Image (cartoon, rainbow, N blue to C red; front, side, top):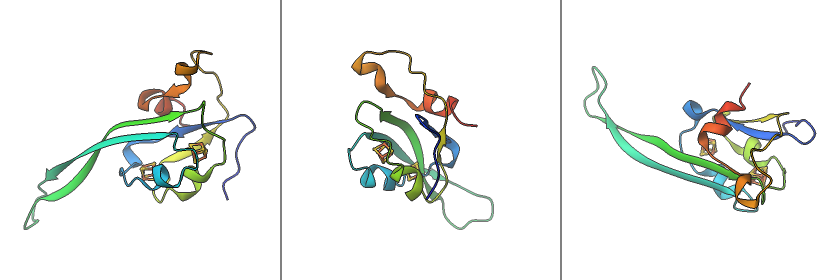
Length: 108
Ligand code: SF4
Ligand code: SF4
């Protein structure tokens, strides 16, 4: 179990995220939104191109999040982490949906 700072937020490390969807499926409040697409990557020496998931959008609705930490715990790639930051840009309900860029800006 990963400890979390009081009133913390969840930061995203985008380059570590493989778009595997595990956090999305395990989140009890369905407050994580993820969009991705697949690209074929050719690597030198490889016999055929490899399919790679490219993350297009990762967002957390902190108005629905209950700060259980399940997403952080289940991510196999350590792409989510707790941070003490808890300033949101808006008090409005829609302002609680935090997109990829802001989630990534919270990383340590
Ligand atoms: S902390 Fe819990 S409720 Fe919030 S995004 Fe993660 S899994 Fe969902
Ligand atoms: S579990 Fe981790 S790697 Fe998988 S989609 Fe969520 S953040 Fe990305």
